[in-house]
Image (cartoon, rainbow, N blue to C red):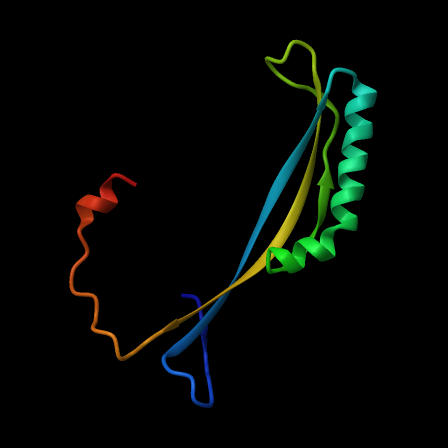
Length: 116
């Protein structure tokens, strides 16, 4: 069970909750020559690291940073292209409130959820 409820003092209505979502994104630098793929991966990593403060601000991330630069490899099915993965991790806070004055949920149609 996640203890995500916050105790709020003051005039705010409803119960307040917050969780931290942690994830990662991998950027693939692909080129026709191994040296180009490695150089592109370095440039992408430097650029995203330099812009990390702006990315954190604009995407409302609590954290955004380089996690790993992977090894150079040949991209399967590409006819000899090379790839270097760069993985960036992030943490985003997700806040919401439940208004206790709203009527309770009475029914969930599971037929709708079955297609998900």
